View 1 (tube, one colour):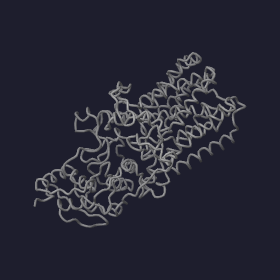
View 2: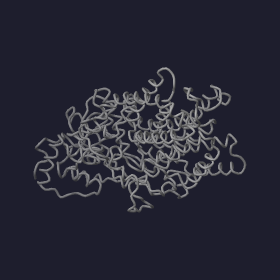
View 3: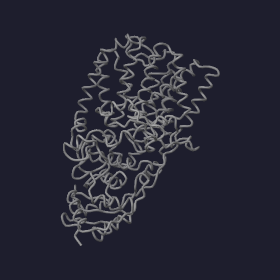
View 4: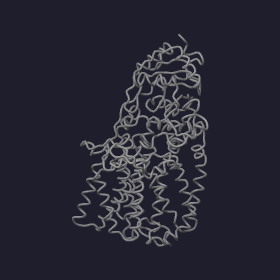
Length: 627
C-alpha cells in the first residue's frame, strides 16, 4: 500500500516515483550515508557532555533514570552469564524482588549491548544507546519518508532529522533509553504498510517479520509501541474509508488479515512470558505509579519552546512541563503555524489519493493532540473542571498505564509527514514565487528556534574502591544483602549504580534492599489490584537515613528505634552497610553526608574505614545493640 497515492491492486510493492525519477543506487547510498552521518554528529553534539566522561557525568535533568537504565545494562551481562530471568530479579528490593516486565526492561538492548557493558561499563553502553537512538530515529524516519512518501531526498532528510531531534525526543534523551528510541515507530509502520504485498507467501514473510518487530518494540518501548499501534489503526481505518482508495483497501484486506494473523501468532509466542509477567507475575500491579492528571500536556505547551533549544537561549523557554524530561510537544508558535499552513497547501495541491493520506494523517494528529491533554483541561498550570476524552479511557487496560502527555510524541510523526510533503512540493515546483518563499522562511524560522542545545550534565560520585576492588566480598556472602547509605531510591541512586557495575564485571554478586523501580503498594493480591508506586514500601530505618540525607536531620535515637532497626535489617537480610566519601542526589538534591554518617554512627557504633568508605557490619538479630 502506498501511503501517498493509490496503487494498482496487482502491484506487490508499488514504487511512489516513476522509474526515471529514482536515483541511481550509488547516489542513493551516498545520500543515505550523508544523512546517517549528519544524524550521528547531531546526536553526539546533543550528548557531548556525557561523552566527555561517561563514568563521572550524569544527565543533570534526570540522574535517577540514568542510574536505573545503567542498572538494567549491568543486569544484562548478569542475565547472559548466569541464565537469570530477564523479567524478574531478586537482586534489588530484597527480599521481595522486582518485576522488570512491569517496568521498562529494555531486554533487547541489555542483551545486545552486554559485551560492551562488560568490557567498557554500563555507563558507556548507556550513552552509546542514547546516541544511536537519536541518530537511528532520524535515519529511520528519513528512509521511511524516502520510500513511502516523497520523491526528493532532501525533503525526506529534513523531515527525518526533524523527527529524530524533535523537542520531545531530545527531552526524553535525558535518561530514557526507551522513549528516545523513536526509530521503533517508522520501522513498525513500514512493515504494517508492507502487509498488503501480493505474491507467493509474502504475507507469511511480512507477518512473521512484523511479529518479531512487535516483540522487539515491546521489549524496548512498550508504551511507544502501544501508541504506534493506535496511530496505525486510526490512519489505516480513515484512509481505507476514503472513496478514492476504498477499492484498493478492499482488495488488500484479505492479504492484510492473513499477514496480521501471522504477526499475532509470532508476536504472541515471543511475548507470551513477558506479557504473563507484566500482567500476572510476581510483584506486578495495576495501572501506573504516576499521576495521570499531573503528567498531562498543557495545550499551551504546543506553542511554547523547549528548555534545551536555541529559543531558550534568548529566554523564550517554558516551565509548563512536569519536568524537563517530559517536554513532549514544545514546537513553538512559528512551527505550529507553519505546519497548519503546510496542511492547507498540501491538501489544496494533492490528488484524490494523496488527499486520503493527508486526511488520515491530520486526524491522527488531532486525536493524539487531544489525548495528550489528559482527563481534564489545563491551561498555564491551571486545571479546569472540564472533562476531556481521555477521562473515558483512563481506566481501560493499557490506557491506565500510560502517561497522557506522551501521546504528544505521535504528533512529531504527523508534523514530520507534513514537513516532508510540503518540502517535496516546494522542490517539485508545485509551490512557486512569493508563496514558496514565505513557506521556506516560516519553516526555517520554526525549525531554527527549536534546534536543540546540548543536554546539561553534572558530576556524580565515582564508584568507591570498596566496590570496584571487590572489597565488599569480605563483608557479605555471595548473594547476600549489603546497602549503601542512604538506601537506593530514585533520588539517591548511588547504591543501584554501584551494584550495576559489579553485575557488569561478573563473578560474585550482592543484593540490595529498596531501589528505584515501579512496584506494588503492598504484597499479595491486594497489590495487584492497586496502582503501582515508586520504590519499595518505606520502613522506619531506610526513612531514618533518607531523612538525614535529604534534610540534614539527625534524629535522637532511642532503644525503640534500635529495636526497629534490628527488625528492619533482619527483614532485608542486611549483612553490612557502607557510606561512601561522596554521595550524589538526583533532581538537584544536595545530600547531607555528614548527617548520614552521624546517624549511622549513633545507631551502629564506630565504623571501619576501608577503601574509601565507612563500613558497619550487621549481625542479624543483634545489631544495633541497645544503649
